[in-house]
Image (tube, rainbow, N blue to C red; front, side, top):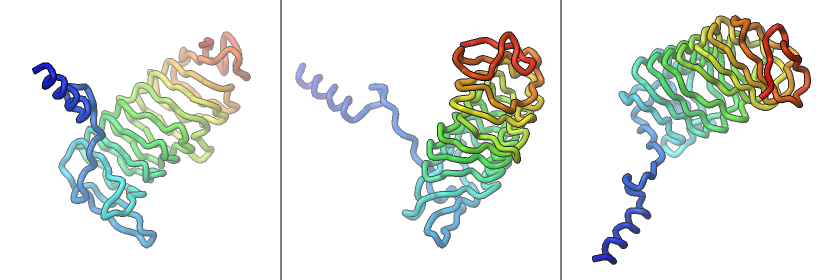
Length: 241
């Protein structure tokens, strides 16, 4: 009997039975949940989500071909989706692809993602959890505007240009963490973010810094960082961390 119990325990461990605490990767939605086109390059573009699932995992392949693009407005104005996983085959998100998805709460982005287009997640008012990939190169105009449930965001490196503005305007941000080196933050990046009270910098001070609605927002920087001043920098109180 003792040997039998031991054998059963070993089988459960190897097969990852739920009671063992293991978690499986989420299954992608079937191809029938999407309208799509296969381009001349052999890659798939999703043109519209037509499924009923509220948790959406976009497949890496359809008909054996890589899904490399989501067309603008393919998901926009969807009022049902709550979670979204974007595959590693996608390196850029086009403008407005998920705009006005007011029930969307969590988004999982791949590390391969390099750019987020204009208004990609605009007015996703329930969005509260999203991690920007470490190699992200650009965040477009109003990409996260009016994301009122988004309280914290980590922004990697130089993601802004002089052609983008209001990337996070009217968001519910309380904390922003700038990872790595960033030199340029457009004036209107955090426009009307009245609750923003903490900004952390991993690197040196940017040469261009945005206007903040909250004059008491504390700027945190490392003691060996260059360009910051104490007790204030650009008119905002500072602390080291």
